[in-house]
Image (cartoon, rainbow, N blue to C red; front, side, top):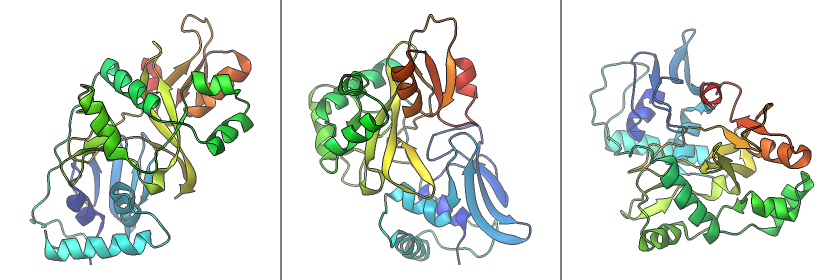
Amino acid sequence: MFNISDVANLLGIKRLTEGNSFNVVCPFCGDTRGKMNFRIVKDGELANTYHCFKCGAHGNMLTLYADLMGICGVDRYKIAYREIKTALHEGAGCRNSYDSSFTGTVTQIEEEETASLEKRSQIYQRLIEMLSLSETHRRKLMDRGLTSNQIEAFHFRSTPVHGTEGLARRLIKEGYSLAGIPGFYMNQNQNWDIALYRNNQGILCPAYSISGKIEGFQIRLDVPHDDKKYLWLSSTNKKRGAGSKSPVSFVGNPFDKTVRVTEGILKPIVAHALSGYSFLGTPGVNQYKSLEKA
């Protein structure tokens, strides 16, 4: 039998505390302050759950493994269980219940420091130029009230269904360094790649800084799963990957005396386009630290 602590070790997730309830570096948003909590036991019963109080990511040990490993489909939890069981028994070992004496080998993931806003924006702008927006996604955005010109102005794009390694290769050939760019990482073939899979396909929604640069992307999922409609384009917990840091997004005039606040990354763009008001969008109701700074 295994628990979420074993899965955390298997995935190389960095711990900040120990115990039956322990905090980690969030593998989804990259928070290092202990906002992500893993709970093995609650009220004397096995829980094996996680919750990040910064980005809102939550689930159990199987959803954790499936999401981080890009496993999708109706059998994804069966596949996750089988892979975890095999890896623990053949690799680092398996421990029972919530015994803290585990001494197996933990794989350390070599991550990068998140690159500067200037560098991220340059690469994201070039990536946008390489991608297109499907007619299905265009219609969905127009149904929200956006015009074709506004859709182009805010650089919405569809996630590519294949060729992510090729996109990374093109960027490198053009002289860009992908180290520290959230969403980019070294895959199992030791080639740069983008953390886009079948289960996180959707609309790439840029998050803008007050200076108008692209901080990162949220993905409006075509098919929500585990009650999630949005995911950050992030490569936390992947080799040479980097976390998105879940930035707030600003649209409008930074010199306005009044700036309105709403939740999300897509919503403030639509609200600004429809009203003309300036908006700050925070990724979640718990993510107020970046909001205060902005």
